[in-house]
Length: 151
Image (cartoon, rainbow, N blue to C red):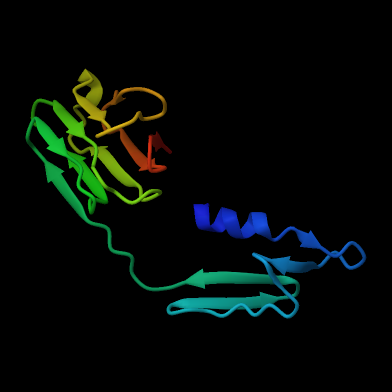
């Protein structure tokens, strides 16, 4: 669940005790209207509203065969494909918070511990780096503006 969704859910807390219905959401009260944006649909069934999205999501990807690489602010997937299974990967500088990217051992050689990710600043899961330790491993990494985390 995204940070925005968590915010939405956490703020739908004013509940009428008699009816059990939501009486305010994100500071809005009364007859709150949910409006579907571009490529979004709202489907009410009983007391449930299902929110769906359509369209294509584009994620930038690239393969790295060098022994060093730096994740960019626009990378979505970085396939690590060095023939020796060795690559020192540095995290991006200035990437928007909560925008994940994926590192993937694209040749199954990570078992030697040669794919090492180091954030540009801060830590990753409280550590100075993250090692793809097994062949074909992948990891999704995101940041909170200060430190990075895996999911």
